Image (cartoon, rainbow, N blue to C red):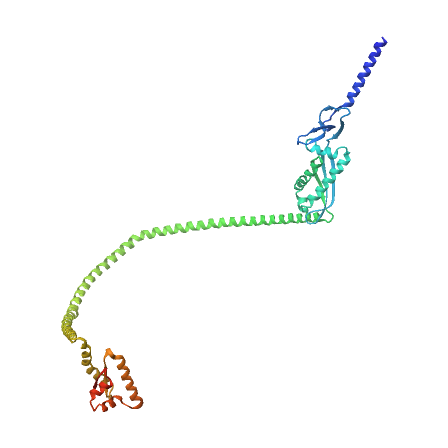
Length: 427
């Protein structure tokens, strides 16, 4: 009996120890946390290896002596943001109060950044890191916006802040769930002046709207007056048109009588004109006959007489031309018969009449001598005759006379001796 009891005690003791060991090694993960079992190396989804494994929303047994277990809360953290004297675009310092909801990322790969940077830190330390990061992002966003933009469009301001802070918080393994801007103020009263300006703008817009309403009312009254005036004018036009139609009908009824009267007058005028036309035709025939007798017949006779006279003159001119042509033809025949001396003979024939014409133009001029030079030897003879004339004019010595005296008075021989290339004719 004692042996059995002893065995039972040993069995119960071993079972209790086993249960205690199992209790110390078995971990249950709450939905709001993640269990980290460090010591076992494994490869994560992005390809790099880590020295831990994660359990989220379940349970797992820690490998004794090989793993160590850590818990990381994923619950929300409320962080109050207070930024003072943050310079906005334009150099205006602003004070911004807000509330942010932040938690540690529970999904890969962001949770790996949280494990590397925040594991082992207290909740207060994590909140401090997140607050300082958000305040830095808040100051950076304020520097890009004017006070008007920050105050008038807070949603755009929050969106810009979320875009700015997401990357920095993701590097820390944190997620920004929500961000609310509670108050925006400044120490220099700039936003108050903006509010006064906005109130002034609202007052201005109200006055403008009132003026526009009055203007619209005046325009509507003018439009109504215009329509009334147009209706009155249209009524007058209709009355005038009816009066004009009545007058037109009266004129049309009187037109036929006027037309008949005018036609009778025109017919009488046409008859008078036709009678006058017959008289004028007789007068024209009479004038034509008188012109035929007084002007046309004498003119025709004079024309025939002039034509006969012209034919007689033309006949005498033609006969004279024929005689001249016959004389020229005979002269040409004689010229051909004379041979080489025809030109000299012709010139001697014309020389007498030429001298007579020259003497008639120059009265009281006596021609002492004329020298005719052979054209074939005209070069030396011309020079000799010119020299003898120049000698006579310069010295008074007449070489031709001297040669004549020396030759015994034979004028032709002396002249030929003095000018063997010339024929001399004295007068």
